[in-house]
Image 1 (cartoon, each protein chain N blue to C red):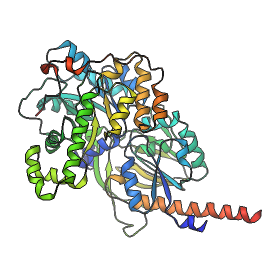
Image 2 (image 1 turned 90 degrees about the vertical axis):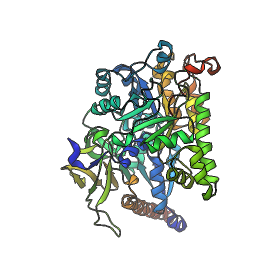
Image 3 (image 1 turned 30 degrees about the vertical axis):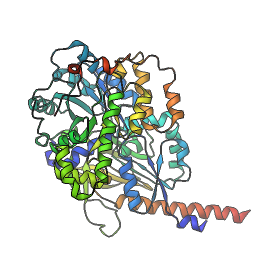
Image 4 (image 1 turned 60 degrees about the horizontal axis):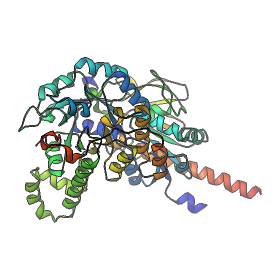
Length: 217
Length: 298
């Protein structure tokens, strides 16, 4: 059990559609073992999950069809840490401002899709993000926004970590973190390092629970 | 509006949108209703055009950019990216489509070429371009002109995947060959490929194109889509294959499932069941050389 806690955390990457390979590469670089998640069975044994950028309608529809959306909701309710970028932020939101589409929910935010406009208005800019640890804690994020959403409303349990043009573009609620931009496209590792750290904590907590359980028998 | 938000039109922003489309299916649509069917089926983007390739093929005549009104109607109907096609070398069609806020431009051999020597200087545009290629040299020439995404051409409007397979194998084979060459042979390789040395050296070092590679032209079934993905495509364009079939919504949905589960034969078998008839399709050898679209572009 101790050996399991010392091993590399297994981090799922929702691999239905979008930039999932880019996230897997960053996870490897920060010492985690990425695991492709396409079906409910792939969730077994993961310590955290990344919900990547892509088209949120595609992600929601395909994940709903296979039962993955329900299975993921149960894991999130049990405290599975998650990082959602762009479409991943939309999927984690409790609602979107327009239209109806299958969502995972879990985070008390309402998101406006394509809020910064169509592709002609996609942009990159430095963005100051609070709450990031590590050697470059205070350095701004080299943020790439692609047909990006923003956070329109957020509940009291949600901490807005960054704003751009006055709009929320990064946020955290417990072990859930979301960004409207794409850290996986600009060599930014701090968000993934945060997720790996949370995955380690949750794994140790789970091991302690199991040990107590064994001890009680 | 958004210029104050940051730097727009950078290569990273252009190739980034292509990266977000990976693993997905981009569907040709001609009406807002078809666009909604595509979005509801899980398409990651739609290509707005007036006539799908098989109709362009049977109608003959000059095929041009679509009517802006038709494109605007499709933009209003869906929330996913909307692409449009301009003729090879027709940079004014491209300027017009960019002004309409189209998300991605396809400089396409499916339309009648407007320039027999020059492709569009794609670096001059804010929105990204995808271009077709039949082999590695053609792909690298398009990337050098600023393409942010490549699709293997196949033979559009035939419902026959054989040319898509040929072109994907040619591109992937060309990459594998470059990666195996000693570095002092890359200059001659660049000359043979008629592509810039810097790009050739980059592909040799990385073992992959510097932009996303999709497949197009003749994909008609879930199995066709999975075949192209297993051959190394990062996503597929499906044109006539959906709306020339008997049950377009079911087929669209099945091809989307196939693109996610492309290595899982059990899922592929499940989604292939009861799809009704695919488009009839055309045997390539029955086409006269002048009827082949893949030879357009240089």
